[in-house]
Image (cartoon, rainbow, N blue to C red):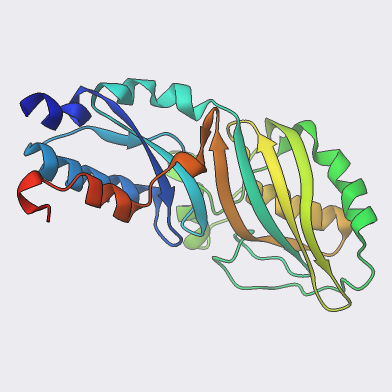
Amino acid sequence: MQEEQGIFSQGKVILIDKPLTWSSFDVVNKIRYAIKKYEQKKKVKVGHAGTLDPLATGLLILCSGKMTKQIEDFQGKEKEYVAQITFGFTTASYDLESELENQKEVSNLTLEKIESALKDFQGEIDQIPPIFSAVQVNGKRAYQSAREGEEVKLKSRKVTISELEIIASNLSENEAIISLRIVCSKGTYIRSLAHDLGQKLETGAHLSGLRRTKIGDFNVEEAQTIEQFLEEWKPKAVKE
């Protein structure tokens, strides 16, 4: 019994399908609290291997106990996303966390034009992170400075996008939306990709939906919802 109750302290990889609006830290805190109750311990190490924004869903790798030493290894793995990109508007955060602005015509946008533009974003590229990001500038998170109205200038960084595939599209006179499958390296901002694609096509664009589907060999189909995890690892005394 004691050995089973120490499974998380000994070290375990936990795959969670992060729900919409939850931050990655919200998930870590919820899972850590459940593990402490299950193992009846005051302290258990739990960390995540790669942040997902609150408006994104999908695969979040958590590590507990001794497995937290491998977090950096998981963070460095290639990742796969399915992104929804909406053309015709930009936003300050490059996603729906901030207001739509700078409306532009999308009636002339075609699938061929989008596919042609996407070619410039494959392979190793220079990408500037969004100002509403956790990148540190002079010891302060960029998003903190941006929210306080300070001017934020971020340097470009090298990232690698190995696969870009349009898997669905809805292009009409008044609306232009695509779903894009993306395989990319650590440090790639899908919000920046959406924004930069809109700039290249001169229509503006923002990320209107994001789901992480893979990290290395881990697939979101193997992940549990938070509710499923809490049910499986209830302390024995309170299980029905």
